[in-house]
Figure 1 (cartoon, rainbow, N blue to C red):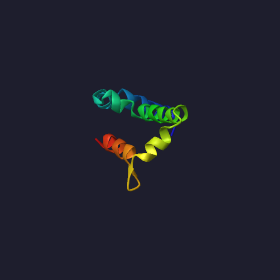
Figure 2 (cartoon, rainbow, N blue to C red):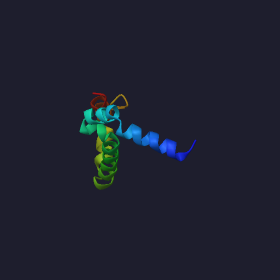
Figure 3 (cartoon, one colour):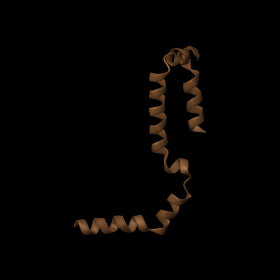
Figure 4 (cartoon, helix red, strand yellow):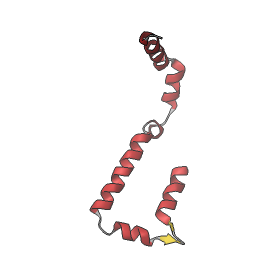
Length: 79
């Protein structure tokens, strides 16, 4: 198989109207989901470094060993 055939197939798939329609129907949040996840991770790391009392405060908000901030974040993420 030559590289011309695979390149042509990739270009055809990228310009296929049905494929472009799926991407166009996605919301901005869905389209850039990986970016938002990385931004949230970086923000969490920065908050942990810049706010010294944040970790103990978050650890104190727990019921039977279940962290309420994490549980709330998971529920929001699933919604």
